[in-house]
Image (cartoon, rainbow, N blue to C red; front, side, top):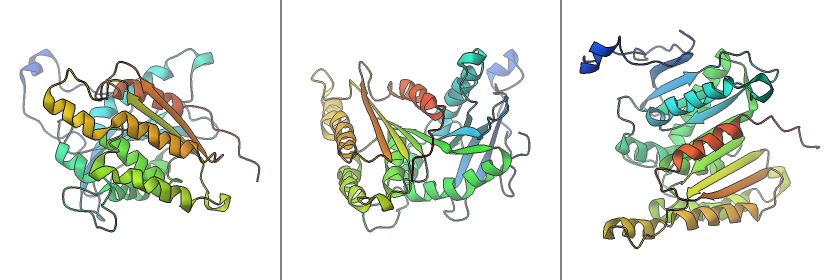
Length: 309
């Protein structure tokens, strides 16, 4: 992978760091085999994003590697990459096709940059341009579609029939925005506890417009599987602190997710499959990991045969 994703203007993949007490126990930060990391500057938005890629050690199947794209890369890349490596070590008769993992985050070592997540993963208000602190979802999706994916395709054999997305919370909202505004970008979209409450639940008001826009079969040049997960404990809890209970009541996480699934399932479109599940005993943070496991299994499923025309 060395040099495979080099780009003029990128920061070094492993910037210098301050020494820590842990240096007496080893030679430096742990690394995952087959991975690369660099900060990519996007000339269109002016933003810089950190991009991680893991390439499988195994050869690509005949149709190319399945691919999983994740936001919140600082928090999700190591998890997803290691889960993909684990699946590659299973017995041959049980081993799924080797997965390429692409994660996009922000420069820095914190798992989450809450200010930049809001800037990058939320949709713009209807009829408005992105603001400095919100509404940049389309810019992020443009960066993926126009810069990240073309360069990965140039370096690795990719199966475009198995191009998947996974996002949690704001990242899940970003996935729903992708589905509603550019449904041909990803063929499999997995979302965990998406923040559908954002800006007065504006994305929920976009669902009917999406259905009307694609009412005729000729307007559906896509094939998408939506996997939607939410935690069973994401409800108003009488035992919670008053502030936490207020937030839970206002966000309606389970109700919004169920409504989204029901609206899309009611279309009965063959081009859109919807898989909705409430995972019992899990709150908003805890739902991310099991939903990611489901998303990786979805990404590695064999490609469906083409539908008859």
